[in-house]
Amino acid sequence: GNWPYAVQIAWVIYTRHGQPVKQENHYINNNDFEITQAAQAIHNLTQEFLLQQGESRQQVLELLTKDLLYYQPLVVGHFMKFDAQVLGAEYFRVGQENPLESLPAFCTMLASAQYVRNPRPKYLRLDELYHRLFNLTLDHQHHALVDATATADCFFEMFKKGEINEGTIAEQQLKAQKTNQPNKRVGCAFTAFAIFVITLLLSLWI
Image 1 (cartoon, rainbow, N blue to C red):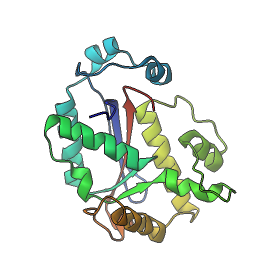
Image 2 (tube, one colour):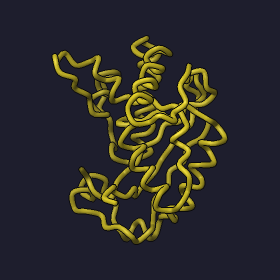
Image 3 (cartoon, one colour):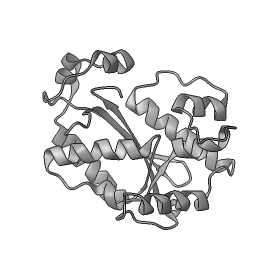
Image 4 (tube, rainbow, N blue to C red):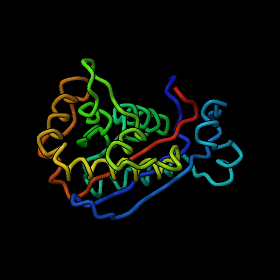
């Protein structure tokens, strides 16, 4: 349909205590999409680069699926709902089953609302949340692996400070289950061995 295409997919896997286990970073070289000028201005990826350095969508998703099924993790992202929908479209394009549908997920963007003093819900961008937590500028943003690592840093820092905990993680699972993700596994997700942080870069910017 009209869902954007992922041009870069990166994921980083940690133990529940924040120790890195592995990281993956992959570019997609399928020629069934065009990169808009707006998207290229943000992530600086070109069709030529993807053709030279990329892999097929099917290969990348098979690697992603292998890790998701092996680690059975809590999946963390910044704007996780959108990332999950884009990945769902990518799995549909290659005719593969989407393993994200049965895994617990947590969104650091939704969790960032606690830092905004505003009567209406407002969420921080990843660079804003990173600066709020570490008082540092997030350099080299809009590289999927950089963004995934920064999201992980934010997640574990919020947990260390007690600003998220098992309860808030479980609460997000329940809200997701009540909306449009009825098959999500719900429970004390942070007791899982692995925390799986994923980030996508897109062919167009919305």
